[in-house]
Image (tube, rainbow, N blue to C red; front, top):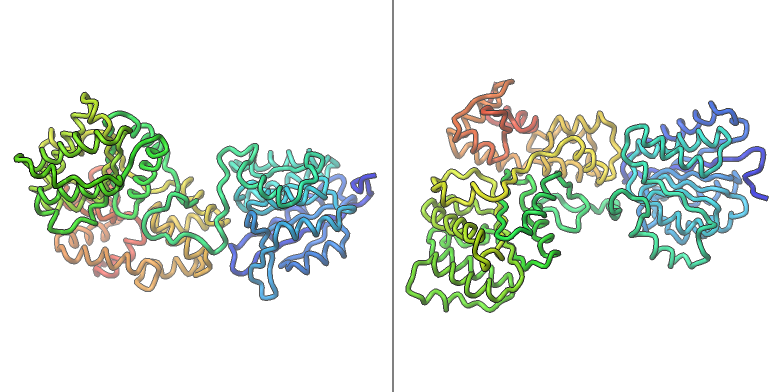
Length: 563
């Protein structure tokens, strides 16, 4: 007979929140479970026992001492690395999947159900369910609020005398009714559905595929092993946040013959990260791709159109792993642009049978030399026009990224900056910021997230920098808010760089002072407004501007002596 038929069942609540992990509100969770049981009709059928700051020894002894029928763990999960318990000093102690499965195998005759209310705990659930009738895990990261909602719904149902399967479903419904889009994160495993396969086999099967997931499950962000937020976000990093519908538009456009995409945003807004993902998508669709950053060009190349185009052709040839034949084509007695066009049409686009997608990053470097810029960008526009009708040029796709406004006087019919798909990257919105916070495994309240936004708004780099430092335990939110707008804080180098740019241009400095001094949007000369926007210091509001975020207002108010 099942132990679940006993008159009184013991629920053992085990909590672990190591000092060097994200703070969770586990006290609230166990209190809400207690309240759910107390208000239930069958409250006399359950005994709730609690153990906090659990070490591996504490966990083993608690299961032995309390003889529970239901074991509920709340804390951090690390996928195949196990669950995060605590060591004797209160720091993270990972307990492997195999060890957890072995523990519950010993107590298989008494335990009916195990609830693992921790991120990425489906891996552990698949191993433990070989021995326990019912096990609930999470197939991806689960937010603190969602975890608590599930627990309350689950124990409301058990307290009403319902089955474990019914309670699981009600827990998921509870998440959904709370307006949290994580109702598919909890997964119920039943022993009857599993064979007696070794734990190692189950580990191999459990991780990638999640049956009811709304999106592909992402790997857990390793505890205290986050990518440093400097530079672009690597393709395999889980911290890249989509800004719909931008990515899908770019992915669709780059597949069209002769496509041109131009990405514009201030530095640190994600231009390069998006460009690299467009190239990656093109590669997956069978394109030949190569990435060219104009910051890598020698300064002398940028002042001479002939040298610039030779460098351009050589760098692309090298990126495609083809033989360098630039010298052969430059022997011809014609202009530099014609030589470059011939090199592409008669060599590169002929040699390559698939579409060729070029990612041209930091083309701002060319803006500093207006005469060269007119020639170079006029050539790109000419290629784009040829791509509308000529089969050879239809194979060429261009993605152009820049951070500054185009001040150079380009002929409207010779500029690539008024054709193609224009993409101007915005700051993150509230939903995207919430997602970024969760991916850093920070289970913050709305108030905490609002405080972060109040300092840095939706600026991708500023957000990632703050969340990285806090998630790694290098400082807390209160400390961050106190020192962020100072050179002592984590943005010291970033702020000094902007200060140098402003003070190097008296007109720009005066314009920024005017913006900082006003509590309302300010109208500036168009040239100055666009320059400040290109630096990423202000946000446009119609024809007026305001500081991009409070961080800049506070810092420059002090450093520029604005009363």
